[in-house]
Image (cartoon, rainbow, N blue to C red; front, side, top):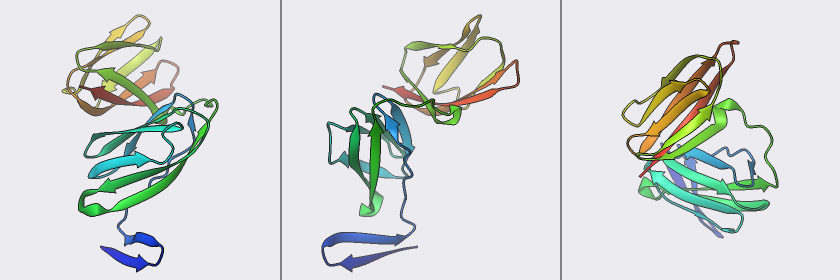
Length: 167
């Protein structure tokens, strides 16, 4: 349940089921896909620092453009507004596998270098297709949407990627 409180100086404050975005610092040129339920609109106050694009009613794609900070504002169905401060660093550190994002256009393919794979799986085969190769795999975008790619390496390591297929 959500409760809206009027506070002088603020347009609106939401308490309860409001979506809270936890955005780890981005690196310059780094993409990140955010889960934002029922998002309708997303804006930033510093477009030279951060680019933002609503992908569908559940995802926002943010891209670090330059070092600095930007306020990311998302508006969901019913007018629920969430403001998050996002930091963009000059260079990104190694990204955890669970945070990696692969972006491919519908009908296009991208090569993923991952030698010695034991097993590969894609969450939604209607969104993306995978073909194992000697050097890793080929990921093909089939339909616009978001899915997950899971890799099991022969040495026991595992990797997970979010896959965004754009129109």
